[in-house]
Image (cartoon, rainbow, N blue to C red):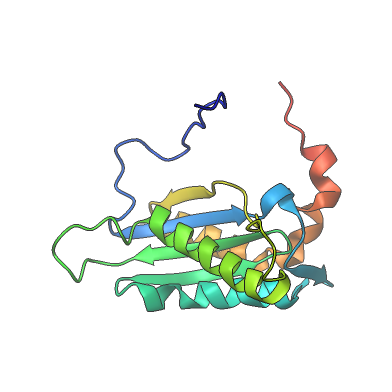
Length: 176
């Protein structure tokens, strides 16, 4: 048995993350390393890994009949998405389309594709591309949805002030 401390979940207890609704998701790379490209003059310029991350987001609806991605942006070291789970096509409850499953499959798909293109096949260790968890916010009304939608669309323009920008890490230390 290991002696590692147990991670505290940041998910809402008793909330069904497979139910109808809109979800704002942020997924960061491990160590917030800038792997997906760079922002130039307020425009995100994806590199090969960034293109893979982008393609995998566009593929999410292909895996689920009742899930769409309303907005997203791939940034140098994180992605933002608005995921919409629509009314169930299948009347029987299923956890396989829930946010944890969708994000898990997304992260695995990007990692697998990146591994095929960038890591020698003889490499004994799997690559660690992502932070362990992700941030989520349940969008509860149109006003909040619109604010988040605009935030996502303007994220590259505001990269200089972004808390995920490595230049800003030192100034983002939380005071106790």
